[in-house]
Image (cartoon, rainbow over all chains, first blue to last red; front, top):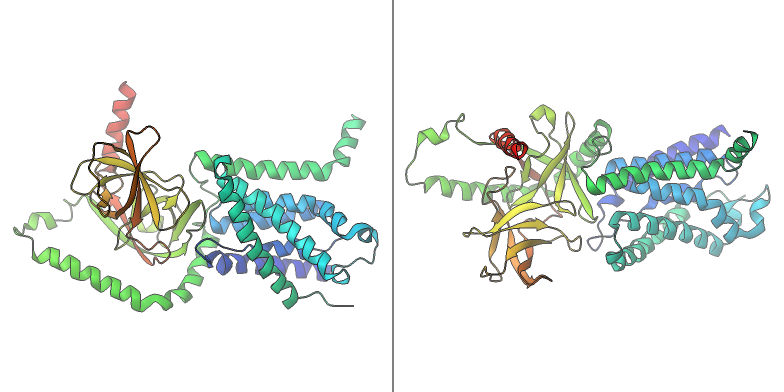
Length: 168
Length: 272
């Protein structure tokens, strides 16, 4: 239990630093800055206190906002995916989620990718809708969600295979 | 009462979510219409120091190029200095000068978002204050929005909220400089009347109507112009002189007359 808290704190700090110092400066093609900090929500244990998880996600988003001068855009979108994460998990993993022995590492690769992709799509939709904040620019919103979402997905998959959860 | 408590317990996660969402939306929407919050910005102590630590490493990579830029500017300024016809020592008296300049280093630069901010390593201790103009060797960069003791955030011209007075060089036709959030090297000049003769390639500089920037600071050249929907004003696309993706050294401009101008304008408004 203590170990899990410790791991999550380290993960939190490292993801924030990697996000703001590396990926926010990337500007691939002039506008693509992948948001890899979403991995925190992907990796977070399934059977943990839900209120604490939502609170923690809010703080994570706010920490990113502090660095990137984006008001509370990251906080709003991160807290949204934190709230709907159980629903997404039930949709992707089905009844497996109810078992005590359920672990992310035990599910199939396709399920993991779907889960991650859904988190990213919802997050980016909320984020760019709030950032651009006008219906007239809907094409710009869609373009950003698709391009940046895809780059986030690819990078997150690379990260998950690099630091994969121990197979048991 | 029992039912209310039951309701709260049952939906506590949903209520927590709604509460946090409202808090963040509150901050966000407030910033759409008003200034950045003075608390949520990267000029505070923690973020400023992390950014300056990271920039102290990365700043070495562009030193050759930066040196070249500075030599180029020195050359230009020397040429100006040597070619002044009447040298008047009175003009060099520092008490008479209207503008004070502070130099600073960019420690964080954004240009891919809709509202972009730049963080610099000069703050209140170096007498940088909100609403001062910021320029580079090539031209205009933005306006200081928030300061802490050691750092400041600059609202870049690549920001939806930015609105700066500008004019076509060597004329007195004014417009306002905005950004449509599409390309980081192109900004828009609007409200230039139709009767103005424009040519692609004309230079646009800052106007005299602003108390933030001195007149005639270069901005960019005209790339394309169209009449707007009402057919009476031009919307002009400007190619910036500044490469917004690669900015290291900036100059913060303090206008000593600004307070007087502001007070005067305020007094005039109050009388009406």
